[in-house]
Amino acid sequence: MLEQKSTEPELPEVEQGTLFDKEELDRLHVQRTQWEEGLVKKSVERIPEQDNLITTSGVPIERLYTPGDVRGLDYQRDLGYPGAYPYTRGVQPTMYRAKPWTMRMFAGFGTAEDTNKRFKYLLQQGQTGLSVAFDMATLYGYDTDHPLAAGEFGKCGVAISSLADMEVLFEGLPLDKITTSMTINSPASAIWAMYIANAEKRGFSMAQLGGTLQNDILKEYIAQKEFLFPPEPSMRLVTDTIEFGTRHMPRWNTISISGYHIREAGATAVQELAFTLADGLAYVDAALARGLKIDEFAPRLSFFFDVHNDFFEEIAKFRAGRRLWARLMKERYGAKDPRSMMLRCHAQTAGVSLTAQQPENNIIRTTIQALAAVLGGTNSLHTNSLDEALALPTESAALIALRTQQVIASESGVTNTIDPLGGSYFLEELTERTEKAALEYIERIDALGGVLACIQNGFFQREIAESAYRYQQEIDQHKRTIVGVNDYAIEEHIKVPTLYVDYEGEKAQIARLARVRHERNNQATQRALENLKRVAEGTENTMPAILEAVKSYATLGEIMDVFRDVFGDYMEPAVF
Image 1 (cartoon, helix red, strand yellow):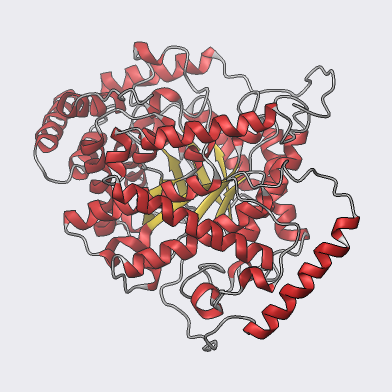
Image 2 (spheres, one colour):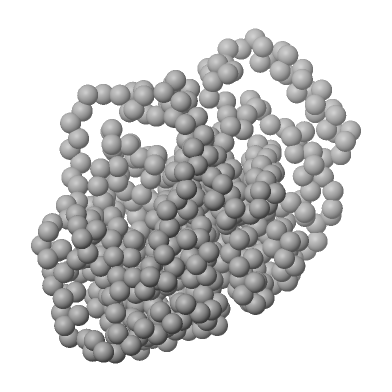
């Protein structure tokens, strides 16, 4: 779970105004011009002017930055103090000097028993939070024995078909002391209900549970495509969880609004930030329409971002995102609680940047990306493993990825100073550009009718496709170097060991599922499913009915089939 403070600290006032007066800026401008005309023109730059002098978002990069590039920067308005509006420098007053970010390694494969062992191993090695990956059948709301689940068991995460699997997955883990993140979307409410029901069976109340549910269905339509139902009823299910969590689970983030998958689909850093915040605004609007007040639910909204290779642009993205979200929440929605304005986020290094060629190089890529996330002020972090371009991580590869975070936290010294790059002429100018570009996108989305309209008309899909194509063209034309792929390539035989998920686990999983169906009170299960259908056909919150069904050991597939029957399936319209 992402930690937060309940009140904004009292801080000294900073005098309003830019950092340099006009006379000084004019003098510096003359000096810079003389420098460029003299020294620079007599030198030969390594990189031709037209090549590789832009960020991944296409922002031109100057050879030098001076105070003139940040002449409009106002410290109190644009930067302020950590833990204070507009949170550019971080949402916590002391940031990592108090404690490091949560090291939350994403894990899940095979059976619930397999993943439970991996969780315990990672916790023993110093991981500080759990993050669950589910297999493809679970992500699509099917039980393991469904025909459409064939061949997918445990290969991209753990298989969960009923409360019985959830009981095994978290066996022996202190659910009141650790926080758990779950990457699940269309079936999020059912999986969350299983987690709650298991915890209650073990004596933990809902109020004790802390964690995060990804639950971001909008980005599924935009990028990842693991949707089941049409957008409107899907938004209802998300809003049900937000309302339920607001009323009953004060330590739980009921949604993690995700830019990660948008970026992995080919978006630029600016698009990732803009589309993610636009999705966040859509969820805010839905919760307000439900009757919740902004300061009731907004403090529990959280975000999830990718961290790609462009080091400074990624740092600027986090800083710009915090500032823009704070301003939107305060100015658009009138939020009063400082926590409502805090963009708290998890970050994950860029899976799409990993290469099968020379896979050991992925350790270096991940390290650079992780450092950017830390310097950008992330609240928790997952680092990818070196073998993820080939298969799910092995235990040894996952350990190296965890140790990467621990070395940064313990040996690099970057935790000693809050926002250590704050005030850099380059970084502040890039932060400003990123914020403005993201806001322009949000305003375009608003003008086009909002997020749902832009999903239906293909706006997001076209923008991402064009960015992905442009980036690949830059690689193909050697305007961008990918080490080991389009430069520094070698003939090699890949020797990295990979994880293998065997079929014995699938047999055991199906056998447990059969026992559940045989041993449960099927009359009670059927009554619970009929009640869930009644609720789904009406307007009341679905979470209590889902919990009732889960506790009767209704399976994931049975619960999602109720929703399929009521809401229907969704087919994405062609947009090209």
